[in-house]
Length: 121
Image 1 (cartoon, rainbow, N blue to C red):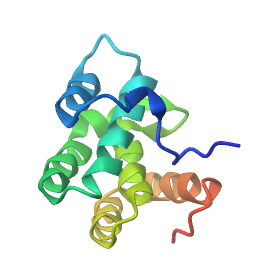
Image 2: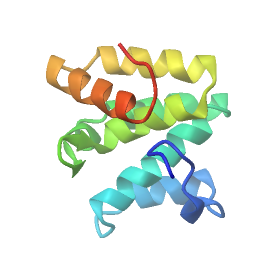
Image 3: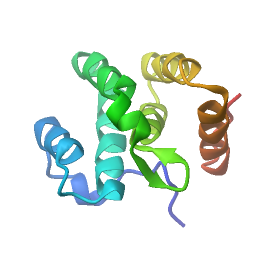
């Protein structure tokens, strides 16, 4: 059984530049853009030089407002990717980014993490 936070094999052959292009391309489905943002977050967990760029994308109002499924935003999926990557630095950044959101966004993200098997408060 797959988990929301599992790596997406569709993006295996893409480099971060390709993923950025997918996230920003308005002709892509919002869900695919969100999955690409999650993959960027996952990769940023292991690539310190990519962390600040992904954080800037997550903070972007465009991606915070762009909804994939239900109340989940592209930015939240990018933040989930940081958590999925597992590095301490990326998880700390994810916590910091989530703390910048309003209470509803924080609650939705906490639900997303819990349903993915991640303890999140």
